[in-house]
Image (tube, rainbow, N blue to C red; front, side, top):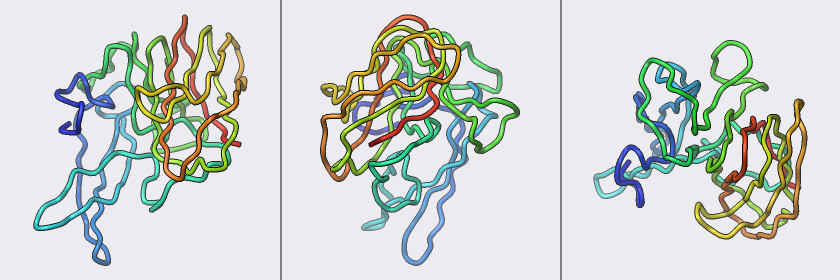
Length: 215
């Protein structure tokens, strides 16, 4: 809330609810610890942390990223799990979550196989349906030339990959149905030492977004 282009809860970049934020100062720097929500309810939580700027007697709102306390953009090579998404919303925006699970209709969400927990190799974004957007910030893409996504589900359509939320596609990936995890890839036409990646799906059905690989 309060960021440019975010006038109210419905237009937030993630589902909202309680965040239990806390701030701590370490070696002259300040950090905010909070949580995002998973499993379509407030009581399922994903712990996060960001550095927060304190100048002239005031704190400046920290941007949610996928970097955590890395201190710099993530490397533009390697495989990243989808659950590090810092922006996630559907065609109709986001919701203010309660303690009871909301309907998954038209809404992508973080979840996992098995019991609810903070992390694990089987966490992913579920229900990537028409109009769903998953955003990741930030990567050093100066030497990245290809991108590949690992997905599973009954979906047919196109996954557009952009470096800006509403920008032109830097990669266009065709998605087809698969009952098992399957990789789909394309060339990535972008360069830069600090770039975001937004994945927007347009098509029929839905899929589980497991991970993506930068090459």
